[in-house]
Each structure stands twice: as C-alpha cells, then as structure tokens.
Length: 306
Image 1: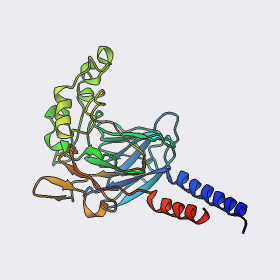
Image 2: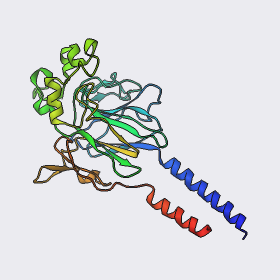
Image 3: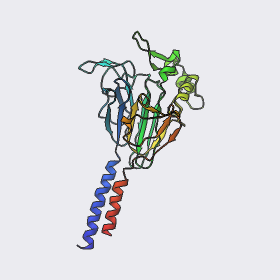
Image 4: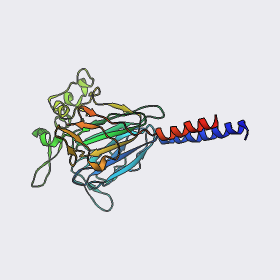
C-alpha cells in the first residue's frame, strides 16, 4: 500500500474522530428527585434560545430524567411542589407554579422557587451557572457538572431554609398541619427597592446584602442570595453533563465530621464531597474525562500510520 494511501486513510480516520469529539461536547441535564415525595420540574429558556424538549413533567421520588440541550442554550430549571393536574394538563401547584399547566411552555416559576440557572458555551467557550434563591426558596438542590477537562465546582443549597424561614417570609401549607412549604425573598414579601435592587438601588454599590439575604447566604454560601451576589455565586465549567438533584441530603449519608455525601442512587459518577449548605468543597476526586479513551486510540492510529 502506498504512503499516499496511508496518509489519506489517516486523514479520513482523523476527521471521523474529530467529528466524534465535536459532537460529544453537546450538553445534557439530568434532573433527579431525591425528595420523599413527587415533584414537578419545570424548565424555561432564556431569550433567543429554544425551549428544552421537556418544559414541565412529573418526577416521582427516586427517579431521574435526562434532557438534551444545544450549545449556547441558556435558561433555568426548578421544581414545583404540591401539584395537581387534570388529564388536559391544567392544574395548580403550591410552589413554583408556571401558569397552571403541567408543561410550562415559556412560563417561568412563580416565586418563591429555588432555581438552577445556566448559560452553555459553544466549542471552547465555558458554561456559566449558578443556583439562585434571589426569587425565594422552596426546595434544597445541588448542581454537579461533569467537566470535559478536569474538575468543576458543585454548587447549590442543601440546607432546608423552610425550617428556619422568618415568619414574615413564610409560605404556609393550607392544610391543617400548616407546615412551611416555601420561603419568600424580602423583595417579594415587602416590595421595597432596597430589597429588590431596583430604582435608586439598581447597582452593586447601592444594593447591599440585607438582613434577610444574609440569613440565606449564611445557610447556603454558594447560592445567589440577592441580585448582585455574583462574586461567590457564579461558576464556570466546560461540561458535557449537569446533574441537578432536588433534596440531595434527604437520604444521603452524613459522616461523623458533618460532611454530607450524595445518596448511592446518584453516585454513578465521581462527585465532590460537600459540607453543610454547599459551602466549602472539602474534597474532589477526578471527574470523568471523555477524551481519555478516544485520545489513546488516536495516538495508536498516529503511531500506526507514521
């Protein structure tokens, strides 16, 4: 076989492998329910990006769903609680409602609701993501990325803020038990510019952490607690998959030193160990690297042809 033919074969194989790598960088979201009850996740795309294939669905306890996304997609994912829908998809939810429909179809979450927010990169661009309780809180959640290169930071709010929610921010179940099902933001509760970072407070210099946002921040140091809480709450990664787990600590294992580990059902990948409300990451094992096996094949091919 001539050297020219060998070179052509090599180039064809290289193009095929490069195409495989390029396609493998698309991202997906795994939404997992670790709560002891059913939840109804919702998704909302940002301006200029398409809605995800699933905009609202029922998710039973212990179940998870994979949702594919396109490069540059931006939007948010949250969970609704206490929902009831008829056969046509009409109904209501106690928290996180999106227009009284099972499928949100472009409607956002009615506050208060804990939010996972993300803008995906394209090619070598990084993703920007956060967990926000700026619009209030209804469920604990943690978001764990699987990085294309190396490791990325988990973020979220594992602490149950409903347990310590100030009375003036509480959303109470209408049943006889009267339990707290969500915790409003101070902006929603009082409507004042100083809490909403609006009007004369619509800049990071004038709008500072309030008594209420500080309560949230102390409980969940990595989550957005007010509008200009960027410095400690926005993270970047070049990831191919994100796992968003609601109620991550409910059935988890808590070691004697206070470190909480995700439950076995969600330990399919190497995960970080996180402490309290996702404050300081105390350990991070290497994440799955999607390039490791295919790159070794590529090197063998190069050696073979040259």
